[in-house]
Length: 356
Image (cartoon, rainbow, N blue to C red; front, top):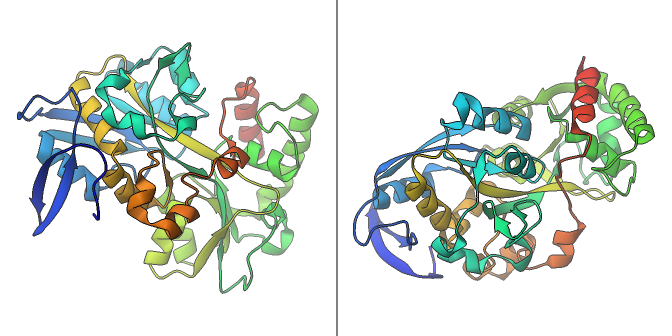
């Protein structure tokens, strides 16, 4: 890491290099390790060993991660075992209010999370995790859903989401196994409110997705599924996340990503604490640690997602900070961030009917 933002309490030696350990907040005892388990349901890349191991060494807390491929899966897993299995969840905006309404996540005391003060203004109290002035979590990372393509098959970037509906690419396409894909179709059709769709609009989208169905090689559930399809050249086009682009490039697969002219949906993720957590001290320590600029920089290196802490830009440098739009509120506002549709049950039914 180059440079340090925020309070630092220790530098610990890891593999011959120094890793700076951000202040863990009031949850951490002065000079004493916390200890204990911290069970997390998260998106892939959010508990990577590169930044988890220093946290575990510093605090004595051991993180156990379960990954989910969709918000529905995340919601289901988090509520399993009567809500006592997991302590934290990295909920996206289409699920965070569902967690709050279900009464399974607790308000958090941001005074115990010193790094919260460095979050981008629009991510301190966003409507997807703050209700009636109560914070039900802290913003973590955000970004757009992107069109990923094989650069050997596409010498220039596709300019429209229409390629995912084009019979020319039958059997060479992959999209998420997620009802939120309905919103992506709505964006492609230029619907102004992609999460608040009328019955007629849903009917049109259903027809579009049914025509797309025979073109799709596989509806992916986890990033690993998506990446295997591209590695084996089974697909050349897919709707995915920047994490996949980073992983595939690292594996030598010739891919690139783009946001087509119609725009994009996206996600802003929140660490949320279970009302029945038995390890809240470790949970608070993790939330604060993961929001520090040095650790957010490490998360960026793994996922290429945009960090919530705007001071991360100083560590990344102007070129990468600009590419991630860290302080670009106009870009942020252009993304159709995931929301919970008021008639989500109809979305789930429609998606099941499309997939057959």
